[in-house]
Length: 299
Image (cartoon, rainbow, N blue to C red):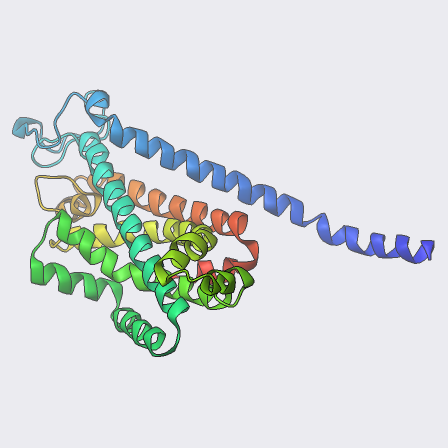
């Protein structure tokens, strides 16, 4: 008996050792990504303190000046400081991401929880509505909405919310279908509790961790989608800076002033990648067993 126990312990130990370095690397990567996001957030908040220029301040005589001590990241064709526009563009990207994620989380969680709890025809009808939005490619749907209602920051946020909420709705609904059969939900129904009370007191707290993890993953996608809309001219309008708009404006100077494209592209890419890394880490930390469901994002 003792020898078999020792043998089994010996068999298990080698399987755990290689996993530790991988987990440590993932943790370090998540910490680095979180630190970068904090730094970008602080840069956006402290933009007026970090630079003496306004984001729309033009000095035509200093147009297309390369990075140096006076202008850390150079100037654009109108003599506007690129670092200043990067910092204020971070405000737009992070604000749009946070507002859109918060709105999609509320809308998607309430829709999915209601559909899962009601079941039957109501569930089927509500999920068909979500499927209708999922059927449209996110970029195409966002372009359609901004084309109908016009460009602008508010319309961009509305477009982003409408492209993202069905994913959270389906995620929440799949978990609520399981939770509604649990004893505490049955007890609440037997006590005469209404649908909204059960959703608010029992269902939403049990899926909040999934919504938080999925929302962090969606934030990167939404920021990238906002940059795409600004790039094609239906998102943030000049002179307000946006990373996508800055990339679009830099295309005419690819050879003569490559730095105009590199700066916003690097910040945009690092922000999206960092949000994805942090989101995947939250999925593993908050709900390891449901990580596959929370990771399922729309392509």
